[in-house]
Each structure stands twice: as structure tokens, then as C-alpha cells.
Image 1 (cartoon, rainbow, N blue to C red):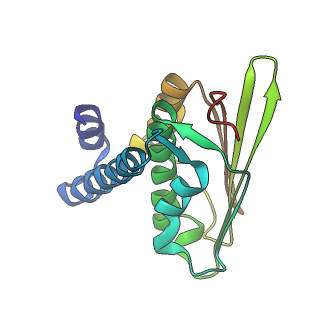
Image 2: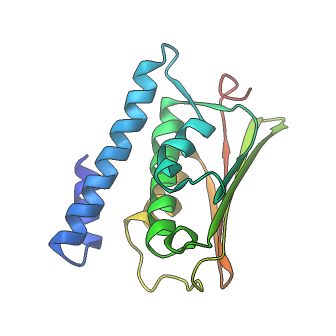
Length: 179
């Protein structure tokens, strides 16, 4: 919580910006923790995490989610859930979900390797305003590039193509998490 507070404060441009961002992050963290504590095995599915974040923007046509039933343990669910929150917030403010015709597709799959299962997540936005790379690194960028990498051993790639953001997240999942 203290890290989220400090990082949000450093990347906020105003008190209002700080309040909105910090409140959203705390709510997202709380929702993820609620899902984990409601499950006796403390596992949460990738689809549940995505639906939790994207539900306010889903009219049944703009958002497509495709992937197998993959359950994440606590040590992965929290940083991945926060990553989904940051991607959703940016899509709603600046990306495909900020305009009526914009769409979002999130596809995920699991590949087996000799080191264990690897989860591949592709976040693809289309139909929003033209995309430009950020001019500064905010909390969301740091979370995706540093926190997911450190806490979940993830590899995160952000492609700021003019036609829409494409983010890929690749991370190892525990044997119990791959279904």
C-alpha cells in the first residue's frame, strides 16, 4: 500500500489526479484480494480478473476475451490484476475504450516448456484515438515494466502503434495455475 501511495503521488499531476488514481488502484487491489479470499485454494482465473476490470466498459460488443481456464495463485494474481487495472484505466482515458467505436481484444494461452507452463497474454486495442508513446513514465508504466517483471518474472512488451496499443505479457505460471 505504501509503495502504491508513494508511486501514485510521484506520478500525479494534481491532487484530483492523485485521488482518482489512488482510489482506483486501492479498489482494484481490494477486488482482487476479495476474489482470492473467497476461493479456498486462493486461486483466481485470468478471465475473472479481466472481467472484474473491464465490466464497466463492456456493452457485449466492444470487448472480446478469449483463452483457456487459467488460475493464478496469490503471488501472480495480485500483480497481474494490478497490471490489468492499469491497462484498463489507460484504455478508458486515452485508448480504445475512450471512444465509442473502440474495441479491445484480450487473448491468452498457455504453452508447456521444460521449465513449466508459460502464460501468454495479448492485449489489443483498436478504433480509438491515434496512439502515441507516453512522454513520461507513470505508475502504470512502472508497474507493467518493473513490478510485473520483478514479482511475476514476466516479460512485458508495449507496442504503441498508431492504430492501437498492443501489450504482451509472458510469465511462468505454477503447475497448479495452468489448467
